Length: 167
Image (tube, rainbow, N blue to C red; front, top):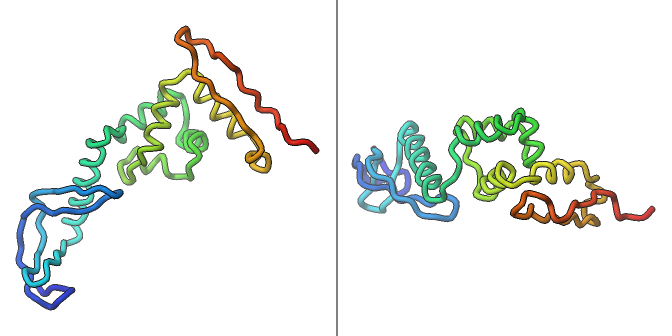
């Protein structure tokens, strides 16, 4: 094979591949790839590139303790929500939930935390549902406080969702 960068000869190897993903460096061993000793470029066949992507995503998931696709599906199901309802609650477009649940796309750390809050904090789901009902025209003028439940489980403050905008 010929290097697409310098025209040198590529050699097959399974040496560790170091890649950047979401601003972090990951090293994956055992992936077949072709390296040019002249310029350092490496190239992958399509199936090996897919495998590399899967392994890097798995390392990222493990490093950040992200919910797995099955855990996302179980969380949504435990809330009694369809994928579309869950997407609306999270403020993401369709078919994002399906992609997360099937492992096609990995959720961000922010969304992962939001899913955990919805599942684990009493009143969080209801708060987000009410927030979704606030008119986007009034959204910038709205300040909706959220006070987490006290240890006893009761909310210290019940937020008001009435518009404060006059007119």
